Amino acid sequence: MLHKKRNKIEKIDRKLAYYFNKRFQVIADLKELKKINDLPLEDSKREQDLINKMIPLIDEDKKDYFIEVYKMIFKLSKAYQK
Image 1 (cartoon, rainbow, N blue to C red):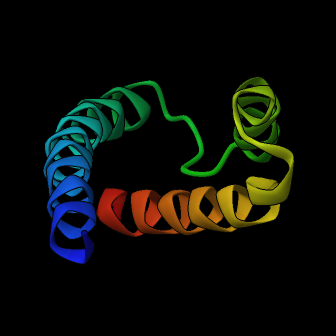
Image 2: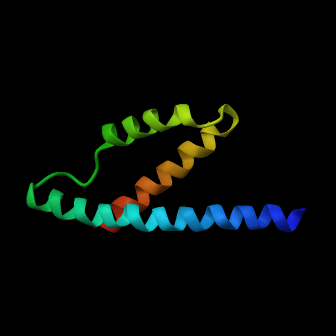
């Protein structure tokens, strides 16, 4: 039973890793667009808007965790763009 659940989590983690890479590929493109158009690295309103769009998809008891994960993703995305 435990082994099956861990295998399930590992499959999900592989998907997360795949989409993590995809997301950062797009971030690399954004970095260039921001540089060309002299746009700021940070857009707090955009970050909050994205969280607001996604939060309805999350179970109530997991929303705070989701927000923390996304804040970390935003932080890492900005670091990657520097």
